[in-house]
Image 1 (tube, rainbow, N blue to C red):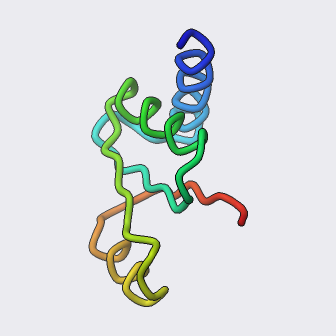
Image 2 (image 1 turned 90 degrees about the horizontal axis):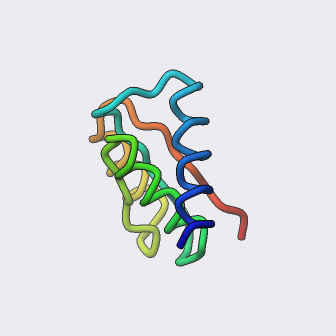
Length: 79
């Protein structure tokens, strides 16, 4: 658990360094993976709002979901 919190805090600090503030939205486009959990914890610990559009649907629907969210920073995974 300590490693997870350390990685989450580092990720949250990186997003904060990029200019994100408490209440900002952070999205993730990724399959179920460790990085997903890190982003989820980072968002919670920094006060960000996590946005996770449905990735199993068509690309156009995912883009529509993201467009409905005002000012969202997105983390994507490879694969």
